[in-house]
Image 1 (cartoon, rainbow, N blue to C red):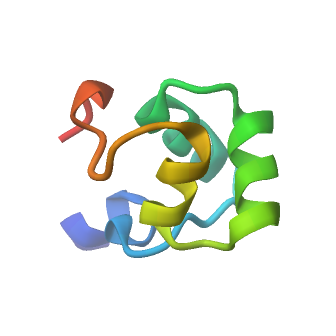
Image 2: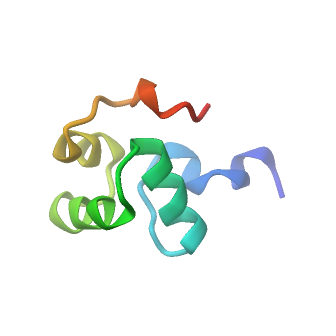
Length: 66
């Protein structure tokens, strides 16, 4: 497993197929996973669009995840 494999799709797309992915994005956006899922259902998997839908900047500097 490479370092790139350790984060969901290396921040190129918001993938929510695995529980760890849901937890990652919820932590990243500091938003409940249900809200992230709803945003993805509404605007798709592009992290910039998901961030906009959640009222967050992209990249979201406040996440604390590097």
